[in-house]
Length: 462
Ligand SMILES: *Cc1c(COP(=O)(O)O)cnc(C)c1O
Figure (cartoon, protein in one colour):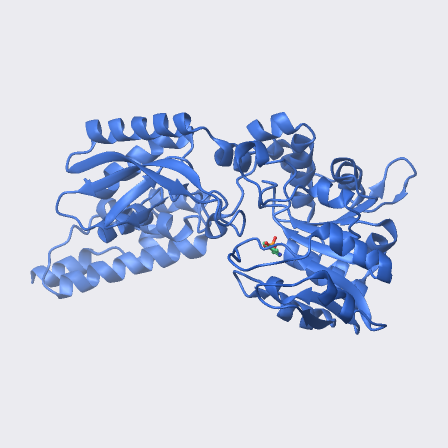
């Protein structure tokens, strides 16, 4: 009896939709997801009733559940997270966070028309690359520059334009794989160029290159060992030597730098990362690098080098398929302007700032987080420990970045459970587990994130 009565009282989809709630939702959310949520919640209540429960089936109660459901359905899938992993350029977490000042540039270009491919001076068609060409030439010292979607695209395009159907000589020690199935031999195959391996995994000398060059050779390619190191009994040919060989034998030389750093990191104890303008000044014909690794900008692939080659690359049919989008271009232009002043770049580009942060700044932030957790989160046991952060994103392998982490233990909860709850919260916090304890690396947590972080921790474990 009770059951029948309840089922009868359960409002229909139409009743809910036409109620003041429905009218309110229609103004804010897409109709299809409102309907989906209403149907879903009514069906759920019906099942509950049939199973013998006595749910509140008033319009008010049902609407509350429906609204939660709608919000869940239309919730942003791509959203910000707090990176507490200590990996500065985290490939899975969006790589480089942009400097806030580039946002104005993106907004202006995104919401209106722009001179993307229009020459305002002459009143005719222009090139999208022109907007960043001048500053790339200025910063790197190269004769010309062109930009594409990412560095993988840059390498593919260069190989296609320069070496299709001919041979490219690469040291066996540099046949790299970057995450996401980017392998030099595979990219080579896709470009239509033929890979000619020289030397061995650990040792390649200039004679190896010289002996391999013949009339089929289109290019000598050097690839920066961005995410691994070969140590022990090793030898490789420096880019300067390779340029010498290329000149003597009349073959162009390309260097895929991967990260592409504009700032000299040697004063900070980081010695293995080449600076782009130094590489260009060695006389390399083509240099490729990413926009969102150590450059700290948007995803992009930057190609700089000799004018004749860059022009050939830019004119290649693939360039159209791999071209850079206007929003990215706007962000890249603003990022490059930040780099024009190395001192300012170090302060304003988040990747550089996070990477070059002093110990003391990190320790103080860790201390603050520890204190806040101690004061506000029952059940939590927190301590500060020394640890090591990583540059990540396939850059600076083996570089030691001393840091401080907040080790977080929760009574009655395992570390994997804590890690999971932090990751699944309304504000997701990505942590790592070290020796059975969740640790929050204070290096990659921004000061503005400390409060949201505390809230997320409270929600996850209280
Ligand atoms: C990262 C990297 C790439 C690929 O660059 P994306 O910008 O990720 O496409 C290519 N070559 C090297 C050496 C790299 O380190």
